[in-house]
Length: 137
Image 1 (tube, one colour):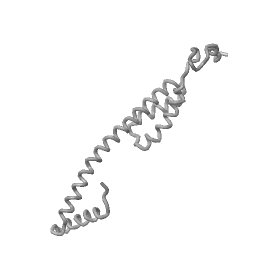
Image 2 (tube, rainbow, N blue to C red):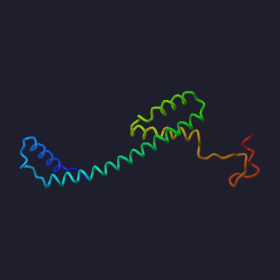
Image 3 (cartoon, rainbow, N blue to C red):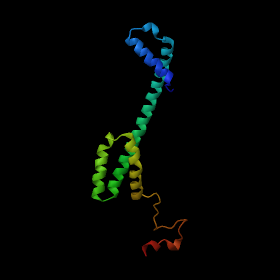
Image 4 (cartoon, rainbow, N blue to C red):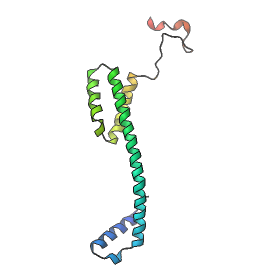
């Protein structure tokens, strides 16, 4: 439900009539309808806010998990300090910053843990049996 200019005008008029004690000037039918729509919207907004909080919490957990894996994988002390600072302060980061931070952390995570691990010491359908030791040359 969108609040249009007419709805805003009804609320503004009702508020000014309340302040002037001119209750007889208020269109209560229209005000009741508007307040009912606002009440319905508040319920749906609460559900939406709860869902967004769940997504935000999921982003936090994913980022912290990737940072922990990066710390284990990379011996660089600067990465350790950065990841430790971020992991401790990640609860205070707003949603926009989490969304901007996620691709950077995911890229660093993919550098540490590529998706195409292949053990070359073992032949497979992709590598020929006589080439399985070529990587040691």
